[in-house]
Length: 129
Image 1 (cartoon, one colour):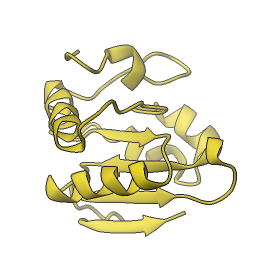
Image 2: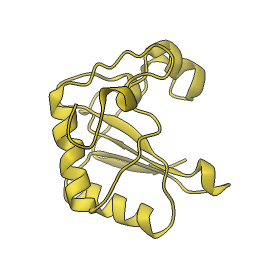
Image 3: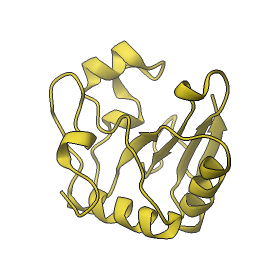
C-alpha cells in the first residue's frame, strides 16, 4: 500500500490475490508524480484463471507476472490525458505500453507494465489493441 494506491485496487478482481511486491507501489507513485494527477486503476494483478477468462493473453499474460519489480495496470483514460500518461510512462521507461483508444470512451484505456524480457514478451514494446 502507498499514499495513492491500495492493495485492493491492484488485486485480482475474482479472488483478491495480489502478488506485486512493494516496488510496484514505488513505480506507481513515481508515475503519478510525473503525470501530475490521479491514476485510476481498472485492473492490476490477475490470477491465471481470471486472466484466461478476460484476456486474449491467456493464463500467463502480463497481468499474471509477479517477477521482481513488475507491476501491470490498466488505466481507464482517453484523449489528452491518455497522451500525457503515455508520455509520463515513457519518461520513466515503463517497458510495456499498450494503447486501447477505440470504441466507446468507457472502454478506452492505457495498459502499462514493467515486465522483464522473456520468450514471447519483448521489452521495451509499444502496441495498440
